[in-house]
Image 1: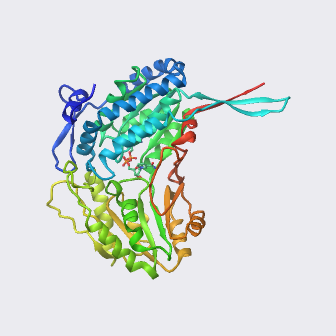
Image 2: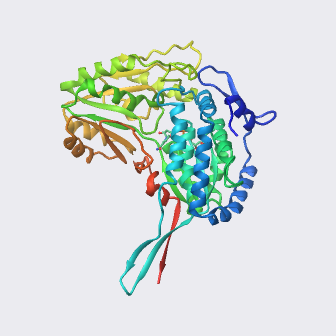
Image 3: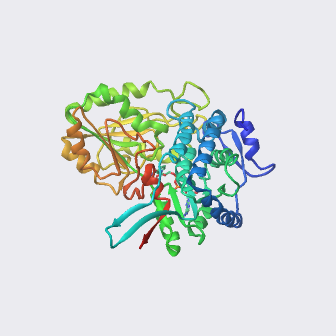
Length: 470
Ligand code: NAD
């Protein structure tokens, strides 16, 4: 069955009465209501997931692949209703690399989880020893997600889990529960009952999921602080963890780069999803020889990108998803301006405006130690730091405790690759930033987390390796 619009989809997932109101960050209007689960309801869902797991596993890879592809078809059949709901709840515009793009990505990543064979691997076979590595299902996976890409990241967690024969209990962010409930509803029109359950709830539900003895692995995407809490609460049961945590990605421009040619790539690297992206470019290091030209080229691109309510088709930038995040961005930019940094574009938000809109902001001549540089802003404000040479840029880039992504911008690919090899980050892009691909493994370095998602590595991360020796 496909839904014609977000209202129809909402009617299928909302409680008949009551529930917690969820508001549109662009307008303040109520989007819908959500029934938040208690810890006892979470426990019951985990029991269901445990009971459903052997049957799901027994279906085998081919049948699970068929069902997951059918579920991806159903996302596509409901794409417009899903995108509209996502736009209203999360704030991101329909167009640009935003809501429609995210729903399309959700279908694509779900299909990608069916694109690999996970065969037993003969490790040693020398006549004396015969050792074979198999990949077994782990059991029940607890998935905990953030509010910035709620549908896409849910798929990143659930698709490889289900493919490998596990069942999933998923807790969305309390800021974007409707998007994930709607996605789960669409998937569950195809999947067998009990295999995937979305349980909306607050932090206490997340804490219980991370500590529950019947959860075998936690897939977590969110802040580094919460990631550390999950490590602690999962310790007693020695759960497997994949942690995709916060980042503060550096971009390093080399002196040979052409400012006009790289400006649009730099802009979208930093401002995708209005800056609310884990692996967005969050601090840009530019050599003094081309500093003014890069700043000017970025201002030209940024100034013409329309920001506004997500359902208005012309917009490509939206509001901050929640007021708390707005306050973080406003505070960091204020700190930078107070320190004497130059406002190249933006800042000065209209405090009377409806919605959590913070203007597209570029800050130049900023001290490398300023908080806007060293803390994760997670919003539409990019600090551009002048450096004397590439050595200084590398030193600054590697100085922080996080290392999700980074990028190098140059006309010389070989030189860029050499600089990339010296950056402490899980992914280093050359002449782009944040361009992810379901075939290419993705994961953080340092305190940006551990474990890989996507591709064959991502599937193996949802399995228990078992060696059969003899
Ligand atoms: P958050 O850590 O505040 O919340 C994430 C989820 O954890 C929510 O569902 C929340 O309810 C739950 N939670 C909170 N406390 C918990 C606890 N003690 N135990 C278990 N669960 C708990 O993160 P957020 O603000 O929603 O997301 C923004 C952050 O996520 C940013 O730092 C961003 O960089 C990061 N992020 C990382 C990636 C990545 O792939 N590395 C992707 C997206 C976002």
